[in-house]
Length: 272
Image 1 (tube, rainbow, N blue to C red):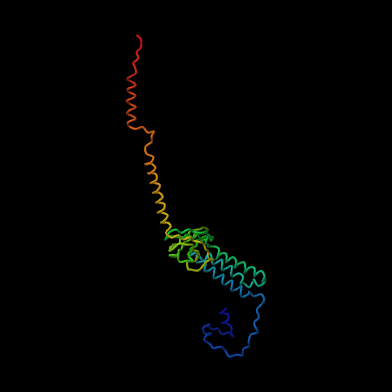
Image 2 (cartoon, rainbow, N blue to C red):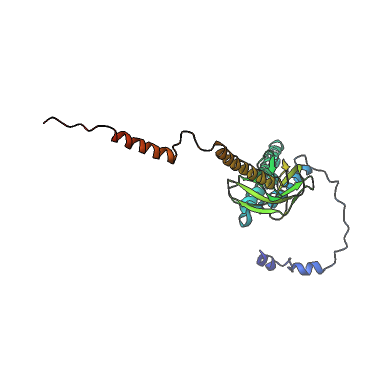
C-alpha cells in the first residue's frame, strides 16, 4: 500500500514522527453537533459492573499460583462478550447476557473457595491451634491465607496461616492462637489470596475459651486415679484373710489325724 501511494504523483508520504513535529494548520473549524447517545448503547452502570467483575476475577486467580490463567482467561472472555457491538441488535438479550456473566463471575470469585461453617469450639489450653476447614471446588489447587479476628483480647492470634487446598477437596488449616483469660469469644474467619485480597464474606463461630483447664483436668484425673488406688489397698487390708482359707496349722493337724486313723484300723488277712 505504501509503495502504491509513493508511486502516485499527487501523494507525498512522510513518517508519523514528522507529522507530530509539525504545527496544526490554522484553518477554520466547525464545532461538532450535539452528542446524542444511541438507544442501543450499553448503559454506563453495566460497563462499570463488568469492569469491576473483571478486576475481581483477575485478583482471585492468584490463588492458583502459576496456573492463574486457567481462571482469569475464560472469565475475562465471558465478561468481554456483552461489550461487543454485535449485542446491539438485541438490547434485551444483551442485558440477560450481562446479568448471567456477572452471576457466573460472582460464583467463581466468592463461592469456589469458602470456609466450612462450624459450631462452637472448646479451647481448654493456653496455647494451641484452632482448625478452620476450607473447601476448594476449583479444578486447580488453591493457595489461601486464613486470618482469625477474635472480638475479645482474651484470645489472641499469633500469626496468619497459608496452606494449599487440593482441587475439589477440603483441608483443616491450623491457626495458632493464645488464650489469656476464660470466656466466650466470637471469632471471624477470613480467607485471603496469597497477595492479601479478601475472597468472600466472613464466617463467624463461637470459641469457648477455658485457659488452663487442660492442666487442671490432668491433675483432677491423676487425683482420682490415686484415690482409686488407695481405696483398693484399704479394701484389701480391711477384708484381711478369709475364714475359709486353710492355715499351716490346719494342714499339719489334718495330716496327723489321718495317720492316726490309719494306724488304729486293724489289718485284715485272707483264710488259708
